Image 1 (cartoon, helix red, strand yellow):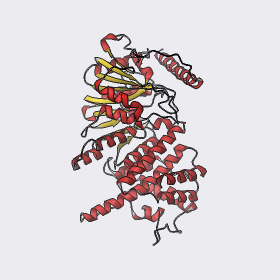
Image 2 (cartoon, helix red, strand yellow):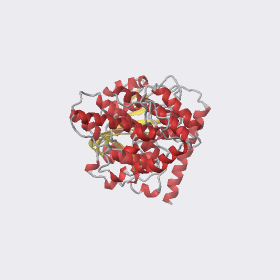
Image 3 (cartoon, helix red, strand yellow):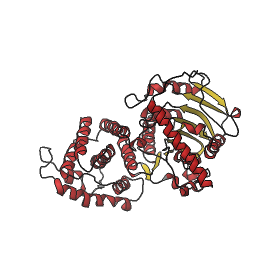
Image 4 (spheres, one colour):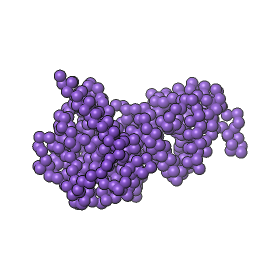
Length: 483
């Protein structure tokens, strides 16, 4: 039922002049879904308070509650045919509801409350639907959804993840919000966070890493009341620069069961590394920072190693913000292992000298839908220099793509061998003392597998040429900046 409801909503949004892409569908579904969730959340809190003999103070004033403006019901349980619709509904939403909800941000006591999240979400977006009749149809469909039981919330979270994935598959800039869930689950398993750890993603996107870490920790042991509270309020932290990603990430965590996610809408890279103090540090970093982006020179001044490559700035940030003994699992372009420009060499040196880079997972092309760039995952622990690096090259007997995506079984051998750092056809180890001490080149060259000559697809060649052109332009710009 839930799945069909989402399809019906997409059909309505597709026909509305204000929604032109899959990104718009997710954004508009999100704010309406959030208000329905909030209504069910308040009902649950009120019931719990009454059972405990306490009074419950509602978050939302009566005239702005879901069952008053969105879905007033008749005695038979159906939505009243006199409910707001057309221009009246658009006028109420745009000129009364949104301004009211925006005020919550300034009026709330703290950023880790659901009231603050209400205010921040509605400060970051607007209603894009032009037709009040379309909006009425969407509301009617969303009113059918329930968030009361664990099973309902679980199903809803999976459907929302599917929408985020579709947004990534739709191309444009949607792909940056979605990292394949089988890969995230594997990274979380290898890093193995524990309850009591503070877990951080400074490029949070759709919050996939934080959601999977939450699921992993929930299943790691029988939770005490204190454990549950720790997971709700003192475990997951994120920062996100883009408004839509911030909203999607917040909504995704709420649907997974974190009531007031500690996600902040800010540019992580605007923070000067020199200002990070011990109290700001985290036990675990899990992230897939955007690669290929370019940051302005004033942002680069916040970092000891100057570079326009966004992912390289993020990696410096992650190393700095980890506590001593803290662990990281970070996705980055595989060219990071071998690039000869000053920034890449300096960053590899920094990583190897300040952290134990214990594992590198080399991923095949096509792992990320719509991105021709090849990637690796760096697993490291801060506090002691690297002596040996274990590599695993994921070699599959098929090409990855939209209809043939990465799955957890593909990564099963890696997960198993990683625990003992065993050699195999796909894995090997290198001693850091044996690599070039001038370039710190960490190229993932598998000594156990003979290279087979194979004809490459034209699209693969074109994508690689595009990447090389971008890298050449970046190096040229770096040289020009120094002149």
